[in-house]
Image 1 (cartoon, rainbow, N blue to C red):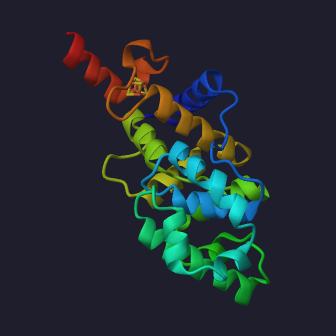
Image 2: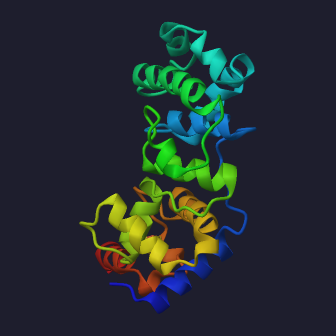
Length: 217
Ligand code: SF4
C-alpha cells in the first residue's frame, strides 16, 4: 500500500501533468451544472456537452422543465444513455427545486442528495464547482487511479475511497485534485491502456509495476 509521504508525491505529479484540469461539463450556473452532472452518469462529458448545447437553449430554469412533458424531455436528451430515467429525474428534480427550494439549487450536499437522481458524487461535483464548498467527488477515474496507485484497497467502496482521499489530501486541494485525477485517468492512466512506461509515478505504483513486469519482462 502507498504511504502518506508517497501520496504527496502523487499530488505533485497530478499537478505537474495537469495544472489546468477543470470541470469539462459546459455550464453557466449551478442549475445547468446540476443537470449536466446528472446527465453524465454512464456518458462521456463530450456526449453531455453535445446534448446540453441545445438543451440549455430551450430550458433555462426548473420551471421550463416542469412545463415540458417527460416525453418531450426524453426526446431532447435521447442520444444520452439511460435517457428515460434521466428525463424522469430531471422533471421531478425541477419540480422539487420549485416547491422546496424556491427554484434555487441548494448549496448543501445533504439537501442536494434529497433531489431525485442526485447521489453523493453528483452533489459533491455541484457543491465544489458551483459553490466553492470543499468536496471530493469520486467518479470512475478517481476511484481507478486511487486503487491502482494503492492509496486505498481494491475492495474499498466509493465512500471508503472518498474518506481516504479527503483524509490524505489537504482540504483546500480537494476540488483541484479531483479534477486532476479525472484528467490523469482520462488521458494518461486510461482504463484499458494506461501509459505506465512514461508514467512519473511508475516507481511507486503497484499496478504499474505489475503491468510492466507482465507486458515488458
Ligand atoms: Fe496508472 Fe500506470 Fe501510472 Fe500506475 S504507473 S498511475 S497504472 S499509468
